[in-house]
Length: 208
Length: 346
Image 1 (tube, each protein chain N blue to C red):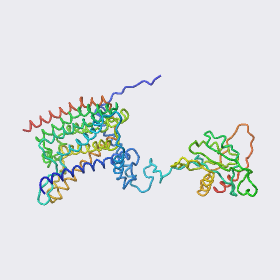
Image 2: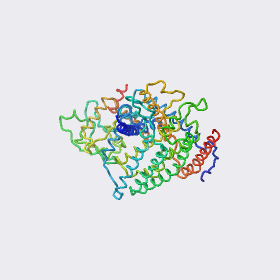
Image 3: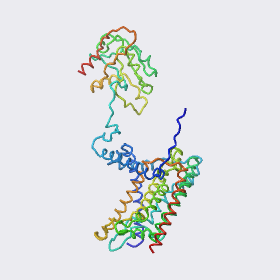
Image 4: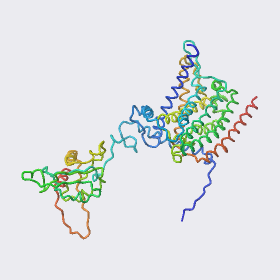
């Protein structure tokens, strides 16, 4: 049932508008003075509701899903084993992985028996759902904190493997690595403590 | 310097001055609205963003001069020109200061002190309708046409209360010349009030103020360009410098109306209780009168911006109702009361 409309009789001061307009002017004047004073203060974030973006950034949650990275383990080896699970689960089909076998003498470079010869993520297609990160058995692919992804050329929007590893290195340097994910409780599943991955240990050590 | 040179200097000065004020007003409008709405507004270009109008101007000038395919080419170009020309010419009879003495020559700070100043302002002001309606018709767009129609109806209706309010002022000062009216406002009224039109014609001022908002197409009466109903009204199809002319014309109109209000209701260049000419040298007095006049105008310019970001837009029938059923009767009442007081004081 629709709400009954209650007609209210307007008072005389409301009907001649002027009193109400002056009240309104007082209200906007208060806002104006407050913000005017605030805008004169030095610093980028003086007006409380206004973030001046390039100088003044909002805090991002640590689990933010931004630009991807391919992580390395503590010996500096690539963790990715080119299993292709990320490419498979990706709803936008933006990941292309080419698998290659690790040759003898290259074991210091790659953690597994296989490694990705090329690893491309098309950011124009990516929807940043984070499924790749969730499904990765080696915690190799991680969605980081970067969100300034605009480019002049569409070619530049395809992340290559070098760029992905570069992203990891810069995140490691600036201390923006993602904390380990909380375990999702599954009904009926056996309680079993998962062995901590090396990167998790590393991040914990960093935090400590 | 002969009289012709002085006249040309005055024309060029007031033309560039109004243009400068209109330019700065775009910045004031944007910064003011932003601060009222808890934002910051343009603050990057130059100190406090003061060069923003310059950037806007460059943008408008370098944009493509585009006309819609089925637009009437001549009328489409003529519309903004008509609007801007009347906006700039209306200031001709309004003073911008008292007088200044340079090289023992007395120069009146007014382009033309004609004895029918009032009628000139009203006549030129009503030409604004042509700018709206010609632009709206020439665009070949239903929203533009509706905007033009609304502008016609609104401007014509609100010219009546505007004229009535001004007529009462004429009766009070028994003159049509704006300079004479300004000079008459020196001294005090009833012994303690400044001898300003506002204290003699409070009701007339109210009617004039409301009608001025409607004449300038400002919120709450900006129905010809109501963006929620008519896209952008009469200037929907305009872009580039043609749109720029409309926008500039609007701010110039604003300045003209503010100056008119200051001239006839707020004592023009007179300060309350203080006679500046007694303390200052003739040259300094000229500058001071100009500054005082401009500061009073600046208050009204700010009032236009302030009201715009405070109250919502009227409905069209409310607008017409207010004009015909409230303001015109009030204007007539004011006229009768004024006539009555003039009679008994004789």
